[in-house]
Amino acid sequence: MHVSVFWTWLGLARLCLAEHGTLSLRTYRNHEKHAQALRKRDMEHLAKRSPFTVDLGNIDYLSGGFYYVNASVGTPPQEVQLDIDTGSSDIWMFGVNSCDQSKFLCAGGVFDESASTSITILSKGTFKIQYFTQGSGVTGDYISDDFAIGSQTINNLTMGVASKAVSVNTGIMGIGFDTNEAAYAEAIAHGETNVQPYANLLDVMKSQGLVGSRSYSLYLDDLEAATGSIVFGGYDKAKFQGDLSILDIQPNAQTGNYSDFSVILGSVGVTDSSGSTVLTTPNMPNIVILDSGTAFTIIPQDLLNEIVSYFGAVNDPTYSYIVRCDLNGMAGTLDYQFAGPTGPVISVPFSELAVPLIDFQGANPVPITDNEGHPICRLGLSAPSTPDEPLLFGDTFLRSAYVVYDLDSLQIGIAQTLFNVTDSNIQAITASAIGQSLPGNVASVLSTPVLTATPGLNAAPTFASGAAATSLETFGTGKGDAALVGVKTTYTNLATDIPGATATAQGAGSTGKKKNASGPSGKEFAGGWWRALLVQGVMVTIASLVGAGLII
Ligand SMILES: *[C@@H]1O[C@H](CO)[C@@H](O)[C@H](O)[C@H]1NC(C)=O
Ligand SMILES: *[C@@H]1O[C@H](CO)[C@@H](O)[C@H](O)[C@H]1NC(C)=O
Ligand SMILES: *[C@@H]1O[C@H](CO)[C@@H](O)[C@H](O)[C@H]1NC(C)=O
Ligand SMILES: *[C@@H]1O[C@H](CO)[C@@H](O)[C@H](O)[C@H]1NC(C)=O
Ligand SMILES: *[C@@H]1O[C@H](CO)[C@@H](O)[C@H](O)[C@H]1NC(C)=O
Image (cartoon, rainbow, N blue to C red; front, side, top):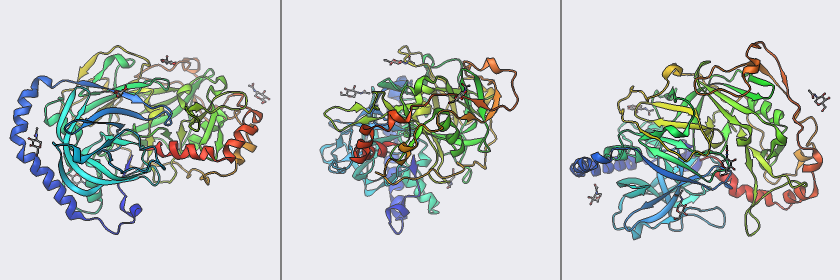
C-alpha cells in the first residue's frame, strides 16, 4: 500500500510542485505527440482487444505473499521481476546500484537505463514513493520505455527507475487507479489543482487497444501453490465457485474520488465443527482495501484478539502471532461477509492462515520447527499499528477469493476461489463506461458508502526487535481455550455456502461459543532450541528480510 504522506518521513521540507507540473506536462506532450501513432496502433490492435493472461510466481518464503510477474523493459529487453500490487499505482524497478544488498533482499533484477535504446528520461530524480512498510522508500527517475508482460508489449509506458530503494525487497508493479500515483496523490495532498495523473499501465493498455477495459482479475491459488495468474481485460470463470458477486468500490470518504479498492466489510465470523459464529464488534461495517501487496489481512484489534485466543496463538516479540502450522488439527473457516447481510461471504480455510516461518541461515531455506519437529507458522492476521492505518486485506484473504478489479465500472467482482484449477474459461470485460456493471450477481451491491469507517480500537502492541522471549514464558497458559463472543447464526450467502453453517440455522440468539483447541503446549515451544534462536538474534535477521516485505 502506497502512502501519500511521504515527505514528512523523508524529512524533505517541501515538495517541488513545479516538478510535478512539469512531469504531467511532459507526459501529456508525449501523448499528444504520439496520439496519431496511437490511433494507428489502435487500428492494428483492434483484433487484440481481448483478455490476456500473465502467470504469477510466488516466492513463498517471503511471508507467503510475494506474487511476481516476469516483465521485460526497454530495447533490448531487460528482464525484471516485479511484485504485483493492487494497492499502489506506479511501476518501478531497481536501477543500477540502487539497493544495498547487505541490508535488503534486492530481488528481481536491475534495469540499466543506459542500456536501453528506446528509453526517454521524463524527469530525473523526481520519482518518489513510500509504502506502509515502516521505513520504506524509493527515489529515482521517471522514464518512458517499452514494457512487456505475458505475450503483450506496452509501448512508451511511464515508469520509475530507482536510484535509491530502502526496505523494499523488489521492484513493484502497481496496478491501482491512476489517481493513486505517488506524484499525483502528493501534489493533490499539497493543494495543487493543475495536475493530472500520468497514464499508467491500465490506462495505456486500454488506449493502445490491448484490452477492452481497464480491468483485471487475480487468482493467487492456495498457500502451497507456487503460481497464480492475472487476466487483464477479463476474468476466468473456471477459477471460482458460483457467480461473481458485485461490490461497489467505495470512494475516498474525504475527497469523494476513487483511488483504491475500498469495499464494505459487513461482518467477520468463524465456522468450525460446532457451527458459525459472527463475532460481535462495534467495528462493523467498515471499509477494507483489497491489497495484493500486503501479505496479511489487517482486521480491527478487538476481532484479532478474539481470533488469536481462539487459535491459542502466541504473541512473539518478532513475529507477532505464531501458531503451529497444523493449527493442532483445528479445522474450519474464517468468514468475511461483504456489503450487507445478504452480501457475498468469502471463507478462508484455517490452513490458509498459517504462514510458514523459514530459516534462511543455512545453504537452503528450511522451515523453522519446534522441539518436536512441528513447523511453526505466523498467524496471517494483524491489526492496524496506528489508529489511522487502513484495514488492508492482503494475501491471506485474497488467496481464498477470486477478485475482479474493474476500474472502469468502479466495481469489484468477488467469489469463493477454487484452488488448484488448471482449466480456464476466459471471459472478456468490455463495458468501459462508468456505471456499467460487470456481469455477475448484482443483488449484493451496497452502494451507500460507510463514511465513518472506524479503524481498529487499539493500537497493536509494539515490541523492541530482539527483545527477550517473554511471551514464550507464558506460552500455553490459558491459550487455545477461548470462547468466541458473538451471535450464532448461519450465513445467507450469494457466492457460496459455508460448510457447517446449516447445523445452527435456527440458533439466531446470542451465544458464546467454546472451542477447546488444544493449543501447542508451553513445553514444545519453550525449548532451548527456540530460545537459542531468539538469543542469537537469528529471528531478528530473518525478520529484517521477511518483515520488510510485509506490506507493500
Ligand atoms: C520467470 O522467468 C523465470 C526465468 O525464465 C522462470 O524460471 C519462471 O518460471 C518465470 N516465472 C513466471 C511466473 O513466469
Ligand atoms: C515511443 O516514444 C519514442 C520516443 O519518444 C518514439 O520514437 C516512438 O515512436 C514512440 N512509440 C510509440 C508506439 O508511440
Ligand atoms: C478529485 O477529482 C477531481 C476531478 O476528478 C479533481 O479535480 C480533484 O482534485 C480530486 N480531488 C482529490 C483530493 O483528489
Ligand atoms: C493444491 O496442490 C498442492 C500441491 O500442488 C497441495 O499441496 C495443496 O494441498 C492443494 N490444495 C488444495 C486446496 O487442494
Ligand atoms: C476444555 O478444556 C478444559 C481444560 O483444559 C476442560 O476442563 C473442559 O471440560 C474442556 N471443554 C470441552 C468442551 O471439552
